[in-house]
Image 1 (cartoon, one colour):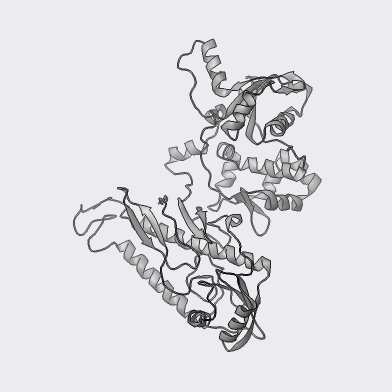
Image 2 (cartoon, rainbow, N blue to C red):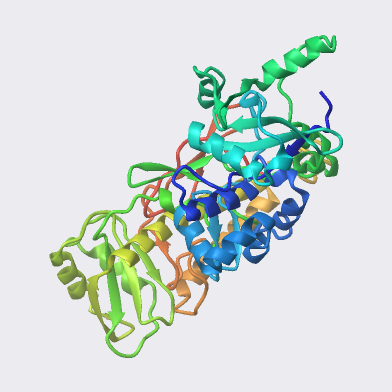
Length: 493
């Protein structure tokens, strides 16, 4: 089989429901899929242009397959469809950029999940044949990753395709179907890709048989994973960390090195939401600055409201803020809060239930805050594990002084500096009285960001595996909502 006889095409223009919005989402998801993004040089260039991996959505809607959608639906409808229906993509607050939620991963098992099918009509007789073949697979066999129309050296369609299914079960159903699959009433010749390669090897007298391999287009064209290996860089790696939130274990995902308030360590849709767990406080008149203890101390001291450690969300100089609890609240709890905290900074405030939207957002922010803190701590621990030049001992060997990057009995300079920085930040946070900053990316105890917990009891711990496989505990500043599951930490330097 020649290496130039496969053309990677785009995902289907239709879905079983015929819903045009579903078509839009499927197409855009394909551009960012593991099976396409790292093998499409233009898309990969857009994806890797910034550390946050935002791609201009206007660029995506200008692609040939998308222009018809935008002309028919309009840009705003495309944005809404992606936001509502896609579980793998997210759009920024300004509706200008789009990116994957999960890090890019090199596809595994594509060869084993691929089928060969022959018997399709000539392309010259039907310009829209690609879309119709894709529709045939989607409508009859369910989700597929991609369909590649096989072509000869002159780019003429060979009336056959390689279809990569999403799982082995669907592949088996396709190749073992009785009666055989048909297209336009004509029975197709179908087999697994491995069977097809074996057949061609026998025809050409090639020994060794088939073996799993990357697609021909991946071997022939651009390959981001190969390029990164050549340059010595690494692909993104998800963090093998999790957080317990309301008895649900949520996976923590990698975020850019310089996260903004939009970065997420958790997928928002994964966060379990409990209604009527959030109260809203609002200044009756002028807004006043107030020390964080004005909220913290009364709640800690009160015996009348015991709903678990609260999470406070407030951005100065807003007139209102929120306090989220673990348990469902009652009207009596509002009365208690009004009694124990009637004022802030000498100004009257009122307490009410937060509406459903704010209640949900507060819980998502709470979970995100805990996850961000775990990420930060894990990254600090990774940097302080004696890496750098020299390994164990580095320059200077294994003596007391250690050397650059080595382990010293007298302590690690990086760890000491990090500890001092953390202490300084905590002190500054306790003294701060309301300067406006971004909402919590990593809550530090200041009055205008989410606070993960109101006391220092029982901090959660990250459990990581050392080089020898033994478990070690790493303390994290107290979190109001979560403990970290014992999973191996995988971090890039």
